Amino acid sequence: MNRFLLCTGPRPSLRADAAASWRALDAGAGAVPRDVVGLVVREDLVLLGDAAADARTCDDGRGFCHLPAHPPRNWRRGAQVTAADLLAAIRAQGLAALADLVPPYSVVAQTAPGAPVWVATDANGLQHVYACRDRGNVLVSDSCLLLAALADAPLDVDAVLTCLRIGHHLGADSPFRGVGKLLGGEAWQLAAGEHTTVPVPAAQPPDLDGAACLRECVRAQLDPDDDSVVELSGGLDSRLITAALGADACRGRRAVTLGTADAADVRIAGDLARELGFQWQFVDLHGMARVPDAELLALVHRASLRCDHTTQPLARAVLEWVNDQTPRLPRFSGQNGELARGFFYPGFADSPQVTPGQVARMLHWRLSTNDSIDRALVADDVWRSHEQRLLLRLHDMLAGYGKPWLQATDEFYLRERMQRWVGVAYSAETQHHGLRAPFFDPRFIAWARRLPPAQKRGSLAMARLIGELLPALARVPMAAGLSPQQQGSSSPVARLRRRAQFLHKVVRKVGQRVIGARRSPVGAPELARRLLASGAGDPAALPRVATLDWIRGAAIGDVLGRGVAGWASLGHLLALEWTLAALDRARRARG
Image 1 (cartoon, rainbow, N blue to C red):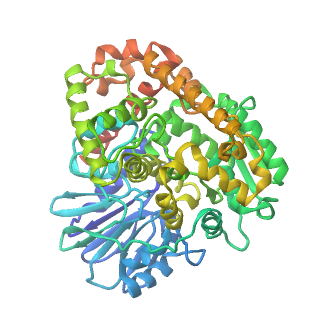
Image 2 (cartoon, rainbow, N blue to C red; image 1 turned 135 degrees about the vertical axis):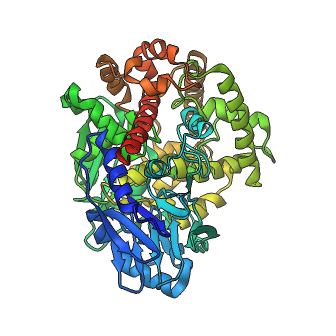
């Protein structure tokens, strides 16, 4: 797996320790081991990576700039920014140079000999970077697992439980005590064996509204001979990107859709692709059946490792398999479109302040419905005490935004769900291909924040945008049933249809809550079925997890014996087992 490691201060054994840990982490997942090379070596610092990262590193002898992932784009100029470009910009403008870049990205830079080393991530913290202290040195990496292996960091049980409950970490947490994430909008200044957190100047985007805003955000992602791919689905966000591209830019462009041939999402995406002249690739997930049973667990393990075992590995494995079927070209992503669609609004009225009751409903009805581990697997007292702490933390976060309830949930969606849930996925995706993320453009975020909640609820404003950008697309129904034209209409008939759609969602959500059903990611249940049939969920296959004092090891067989209904628990237990095994291997490898 691609990784970088930065050490400030003397540590003669660093390269040997890092190489041993690197190989140990990869070995368990059957990943191809990579040579660890010195990308930048100075008297007071060492930057290690693999040979492939050398192309993303500029070292002019006086200073250096390293881009751990694909080069970012400048939203003002609509152009890609290389490591050399960024080094020159930081020398001229300091960290203010980062305000013009569109997420996701991260950067490690030093402008002159003896100057502080800057480590920064994008304004939304999507590209994950972590730090810890060990033996008097500061270690920085895009892999929290590597840092934990080098520093012998123990599990942070509270942070792990949060991830098991809601599917992602919160704030600067990692699964390991003493290993913390760099938050969006911040940078670390490394000097004299210390790292200090400083704010990165925020972008000052012009006020653009509606269609003009989205059109500019998409155009900034295009090059003259652009070969970027559109992730095309039957939903709203990918259609907005398509509409903002315009009919001419769609014709002949690659588009990719994943799913199964009988899904409405796939059928609608195929119709749109043919209508607009896309060069369409349909990746049929039934093709995963061709992966031999003997190789399936290794596929899931590698996918999990690419995310440091910090996300749901079954869902991740499906996407990794899809990536292997598609070209390594830059890809448009529709993530964060729901910032303008009130992701957490359904079922909530607005109120001037955040209350504990609202936070409890949000946790139980929205955050921990689909990805949560089965409660029966966690000791009762541990579950209850953790829930109390989690509710207090969520309340402090939401109230700390200083906004009315609905707008506070928007901020939580952006700062937590996007940063920690989508960010983990983006950090893995950028090892395979570049990402074009127009909904993280600061101009779109500023517009979405200006939208009143009434325009966000029910996707009203976003649905109307499609009609302004490309009217023909507004008349084509989406996978949920309504067309954007109906979704954005103020007519009585359209309102009745939206109300019926909302009530259908409510019934489904209540059913999930009452009978414990889960809305699973596409492909994950079938993957779980095959893994369980192969014995991957047997307690004997999870020896380290079964001995944790806060896990009810005796319940593992019962919970996973329910079959695919336990897909989320299976994924969480596998990721936790692989985390513990990786740390054990790294410890032995270093002697």
